[in-house]
Length: 121
Image 1 (spheres, rainbow, N blue to C red):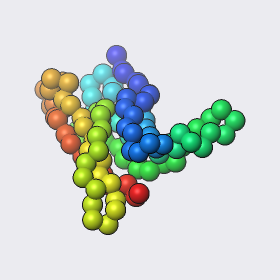
Image 2: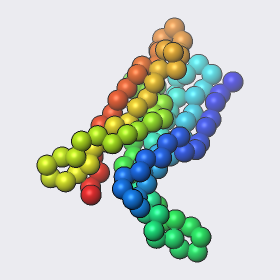
Image 3: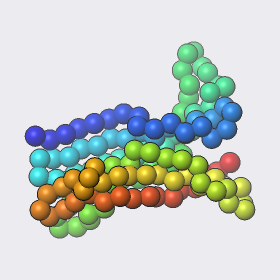
């Protein structure tokens, strides 16, 4: 049975008024071939409400997936934390994906990943 999930697995406070929101869209077919995960990170300023809605700005996005004849970098990212600030002022963010106890099948198993991205101040 295929699995589809869409939601917000993580929020990260960048400063007193800015949140980084991880939005995840995940699709896993029954035999894993064609599985994909789309991650979008949005910056939300909690001080700029407009008609009861907090506007969001896309900061970073990427996808992972499984193809039997091709890429096998599938990762289900579900956590993040602040990393060090770089000399040029950019903030690093560490994204975390766990292997769900090495979930998978005979051809492919999930792995634990840490991905580092940078965001402008």
